[in-house]
Image (cartoon, rainbow, N blue to C red):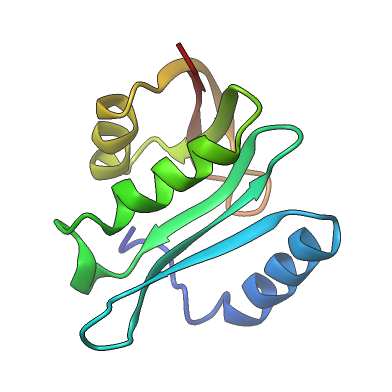
Length: 124
């Protein structure tokens, strides 16, 4: 999402992650075995099945990192996962739809004001 200034949001984001963790969310990271570099992470409210964040470093796009993270979240879910995706993020939309997520509704991110899609995955 090039339109989002992630560096400017760093302090807010760190506080957000700490808050999620303190409320019991799973925070899981994937690392590149060869370099030791963090490839990506996700946060999951395992009881409610909500993924608040799933992100992969651009240097790991096109690798199995995102799928590995999502599969791990699916294994911890209560049979259903929910998440929101920025409508202007076609790469993420394709990724989630490829992994069986279905669009349920439109929304707006209260922090950024960006339009979102609400997605849901249900274990078969």
